[in-house]
Length: 439
Image (tube, rainbow, N blue to C red; front, side, top):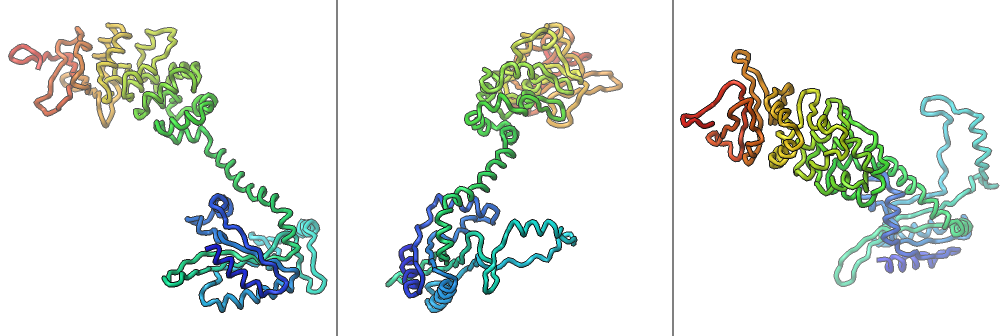
């Protein structure tokens, strides 16, 4: 539609005296995109609707009188155009700004001394005859017009908004000289805005925002691999419970093994010494990252990543309990995402047999109110202590062989607990069926 728009405009200004008509190039997609991002960043969606100069032209006049006559001529032609043109908007850059009342929003008068300084700096020039302000910068008159094109024979109508600029020749020459500088300066808000976004949405913010989602994490690993080594969120920050970065990962069951391996495995992203230091660091409740990993991770390979490589006292580490007297064993038995036998095998290989048996029969002091996997309670009259643990049916019962009690396996198939087994450690009763076997 640019060809028809330019042809009609050329006809309009051909009859206008003291006028030079110039057709403009169609605004490119890239230029329109940048303009929407910079000049209309705070406008309502869709921002592209505010770009109304995709097709444009200009009319340059020798003086104010010619400009005034040109505007009147343009108005007459538009009115008689029979719907081909319709004025949508007009911007008068020469219009005088309303004078300030000298009173601020708070009701106080402005400092007259500061005002006088500003006036001197501005050094406004006025015309001799009418004492009008002489433009000190680029000013023009812009018309945004709706151009409607009718296809002959078919009767179809197509419309587009175009822009017509009315310029003074002296200002037009100044515009041509300063255009390159203007193109640079108009990028300032966009560049400054990008910098502000980089400050707000820095690497640590994006890492927190990822929530350890593997899709988000993998992008950060790919595009910002060196940022992991200097991230304050990784190196220093802890949550309200005193959990470090490695503990937070261990507690998240959605982290994929490949992401964990890249983060904790070879030291390419997070330095090995930092990982090892955090693996040996307890939170306020006395929990190691390995405890959370045994509870939350979905593979035994992932759990192995949370075992410290350098243990000055291995026995003390594997026999540790938190402030609720919960050992590593209790955390492993909570995990419903893996074959618990694999994590129990790992623990049994590193925990002394006497300590292992002690952990099995020791009553737990902390009780979870929901999603209970281990529950301890005490019956006052019978003084019966019972620890019930919820694990997968495919578990090997030899892990619980102990002299502290005789029978540990109770099959609850009759209660329709398909694929599940409860292991009950009974310190007082020996449950036997008529055949003499444990039920």
